[in-house]
Length: 399
Ligand SMILES: [Zn+2]
Image 1 (cartoon, protein in one colour):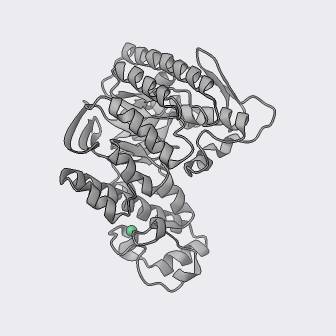
Image 2 (cartoon, helix red, strand yellow):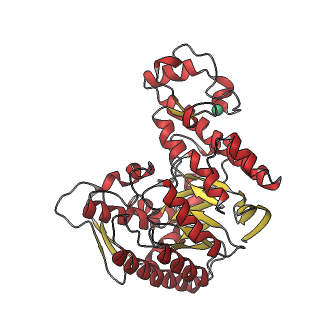
Image 3 (spheres, helix red, strand yellow):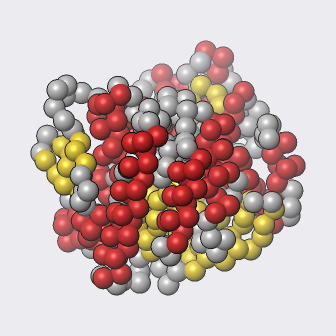
């Protein structure tokens, strides 16, 4: 029920087709973030019109609320959220360990330069004096940010939870480290993650269900030898695909370096997912380094604050509440064919944001997601036609 075919290559960049039981994904593909079994502010009907191919939800959040048993009883995650396309579930390792790292270091696991950090980590900074996360060889104990109730995840338990959700692609439990963890701790966490990966795969194979594929996660922080060791180990296990997770360093340059150490050691014939990238400027850079799938909260999160993608603007974004758009009759982006740009002016959207109308957020999110999907379509075509460098110049790429 799963297959992955490479259709074209240009340098390390790949164009491919990942087939899942709920339909194909043309890669490289953006994965829309739907943490709580919804992409914030838009409906699945909106997503279909936008051209979204795949959504990633979060096993940790959905385990805490409403729980895997309820979702299973309601017919599984696809039916529960009325999304008939491909679905992924992240294991929640990132969220659990953000809690611990935030406590220990007063920061999250990725340096603040990565904007998704604040959004993902914000639940975990309070409750002084109480240990929020405790890891041991067998698994991890953590406290619910909703009601303070105690929970325990083990590699086997997370597979069991993700089986109940029933997403097409599921991820193993991993231990994420902070960029402030030293080499010694990062190594110990990586080795534990490896043992957990083996256990997760055993559990996955013990409960066969060919409607799901399991991705392993490479760890190792921003240390070259650890990343390479982790990649070799995880690649040797024979997962259906590979995700690159954990601390990607303190800067974008370090993130690109981590990819350059890691991606060439992954099998060519399996998809690679980069967990959580920050900005539209990163997309071409990670695709060039051989990434097939990536999730990114930028389009939805920025949309909610009125920051809208526009090709001609500085850093590809405008802040629509600004006074300069007060009487601007143009669409957000002249080249965009989304529902919002086809119908509404910048002046109207600015008015909706200032009036705090909920429709502002929906229209902004539709535009940002469509803009990104349109960029991904251009990237896939460029790889097939071997003109990715040209497209990079058009988008002001520095590499
Ligand atoms: Zn638009």
